[in-house]
Image (cartoon, rainbow, N blue to C red; front, side, top):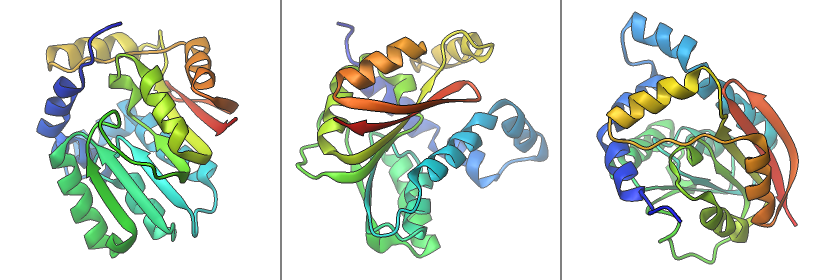
Length: 218
């Protein structure tokens, strides 16, 4: 088994938290926004996919594993989820997330936990769990998937970077040079890990350079 690299990942995302959130906020120059819309198009596409597959979230509980700057958490809260918990290892990301839900007027149903899911001691169960932009940086997904299974009541949505796309070597080189490990997956690997954790894959959509997977507990 490979050594876990979450401390390294946490340092990286904490350092670039504001730069990353600018992909959503658009607080950058014209060229930067244009490059995001072109080269990072699947970041917006995966957001739309999650909202579509989540359906009507009014009155349900949701947990976002690797919530980052809280964009999904905020959207679910605005759509009247009863409780939304965001879990992330980067304190600076959570600072941005808290500011976002406060500004949007949705802080009352939102909670944030600064932790790796491996260290988060909870017996809570949620109607919906999501893990988007998370598996890219996880050395060994199965253990965390099993924990997510325990807390998932009805539906699990996840996104996995596809192996052997044109973007794969570019991301690999860029992130490695920046000190952040990144991983890619084949469709059989994704199915095997998700099903091995106790889920049934209901659908798998190719969204840009991602496998976006909807699963239910079995």
